[in-house]
Length: 314
Image (cartoon, rainbow, N blue to C red):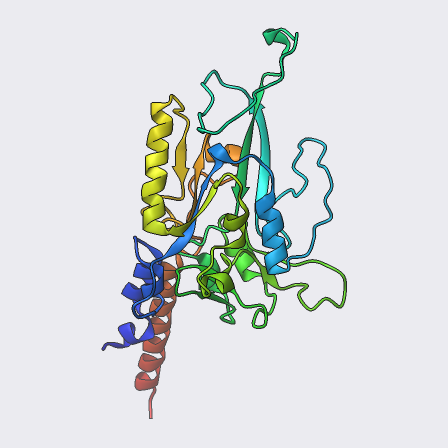
């Protein structure tokens, strides 16, 4: 092996950051179980926030100081260290598309004498957001302590007792998911990076994550990622047949900037409407180039020093 190759595994680094891969075997697991994840169908989310409550109860996540924003009924605001699941309430002008037929019994709106032209012209978009458990996870790449690790299920988990609170992962996440916990002085978890673990402790015991277990409409589906992708594609096709042409999948493309995600979503509008980046890219994508240039610079310095030493007069 040449000195250049011994300094850095260029091909291995590039392969770990680009292109489709199965994250658990890539992380070194022998014969791991099928990759697990979430498919969140926002078209049947009713905004009940049962997933938020279940997540907090099971994972002992502290309560937020809930406060109405003044511009939305959403009182939990965003994903953060104290909010591993967040149901967004998005109000937008209504479009002239037929309603989605959920196949569920409903009473409909109460009859009233208000003319149609005087009724509010808006619609709600509900979306239960969560950590994406990226195939190429920048938070893993930058963690200096090994606090973040790839589980045998292909998910990304934080180990509280190893995290030193450096915050590198916070800046690296292209979705702004991971966050350091804030709270009163004396709380040992303050400053520690926190996010959804996909209920790793429940997975190892053969149980579903708490949020999926609690969802009353099965908007949050849990299972093998490849099977969920087929389910998601079928759901979009059915919605298109019903005339809901805005239905689309987000995070389902293994060739996108993060290699696809373990938690992906069916959206009824552009990702930006939901506060999601339209074209996320793993923030460590330039690491191979950076290391290659650093290695070349080191070799040049060594060569210069060697020439200087050999050329020195006795």
